[in-house]
Image (tube, rainbow over all chains, first blue to last red; front, side, top):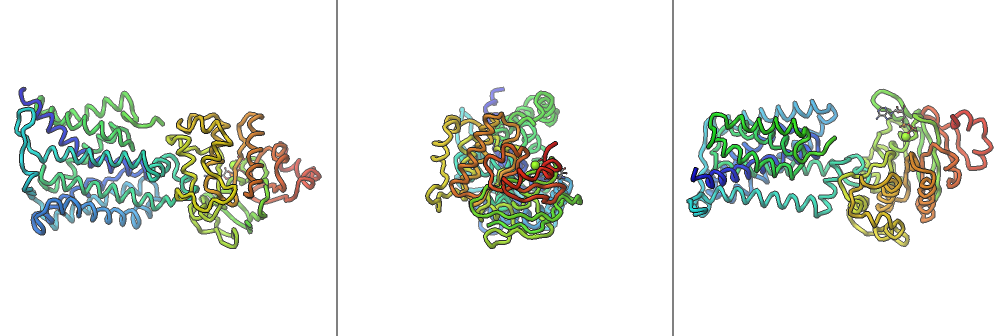
Length: 287
Length: 236
Ligand SMILES: Nc1ncnc2c1ncn2[C@@H]1O[C@H](COP(=O)(O)OP(=O)(O)OP(=O)(O)O)[C@@H](O)[C@H]1O
Ligand SMILES: [Mg+2]
């Protein structure tokens, strides 16, 4: 039990990654009422793109960290503009089928282009080093993941609560039609939100590569945990996503330590408890 | 300034507006009357582009509004205050007001334009509650807030849907006084109202609707004289 601090740090790193994936998911759901099943596929695409950028083209991790989100931002904007917006009139089922189909297509394209096997992304330099923390030697990269999540979460909170754009975003969540009649180009805002959410999943994918390696099942793997995060935290709530990511990160980490066989079930158990006690999630608005 | 010609609007397959025509002149306060479900709200929504008329034309200062998105219509200078007070419930009172400012800019607000400072001076109760959530206001305060929120965009014409619905008589007077003040500041007002006894104190002209059509147009004297029409289309 002496390595509890290490498991705690592992939990933080995973929580960071989970937050980066689920923040975009919950933002898109809160703003657009779309449960985006393609979100994790975009995360995987980000990871594979980063493999190509880092291992085959530039050798620069930083390059991937900047380029992948940009590429995915454009992809997200195009998907919203030319696909999602068109199926919107068919209601939730149309949107669900579309994102489901996209997830499928992206996954198959990735397998076709990069192959159906894991690819290792190696980082070099400072990030690949270790530091001594709580008397343990610990990889800097995992701490870096957590700090990235803190930074992204902080910037998002700042935008949401301290800028005019944030006021517009929160107003659109409440009542997008009213926002539209006050002169806000809501369709453009929604396109931006979807693009930003997709870019964020790509960013998470780049970060995940060196930690978990890239493999075709990585989307499925994170999708379940990310869904649990937004259910537990409350659909559409950024604060909820932060708290739930931290909870599930630790649960996953210590679950493996304490009851390895049941560690996966623990996550579902948490979700079940939250749903019974507060169906709208920890920070969700009651209907 | 606003010419509505023969518009037909639908919700899905149900045909709601059967050729509505009406006119607003600069600086008027016009009241649209009629019983429940005759299409008054749908008329305002059609002007605002929230419902798209499938036929007919709406011209506002020589611009065609049919086919434009609500935000484009708003930016041309049409303000809309919907029924049932759509306050942004998770925004503070102050943030609700800020939402009304178009593009967040204070540009071209001329003499007598609406600013946050002016609103607070006129409605000290809103300033006292500026950091409260909009949903914590009383019904009357919420109604004031929705109207001034739209005024923050300094529209040239404002469409107000049943501003006095569900308010206590004392507050009804406040709201109507406020709309009279708005008109005095040079903004043209088109107001939907169920209660013509309240409307008659402030309006210049009236339209009465029935089953998706305009059945009466006239000024206060004409409305008071048209007893038969009032009996058929207004009084329950
Ligand atoms: N979103 C909608 N979908 C389908 N039908 C609608 C919708 N909104 C209104 N209607 C129908 O359209 C007709 C006109 O409605 P509208 O809201 O314009 O009436 P109104 O004159 O404003 O009535 P009220 O005084 O009750 O507000 C009604 O029969 C109503 O049932
Ligand atoms: Mg109505």
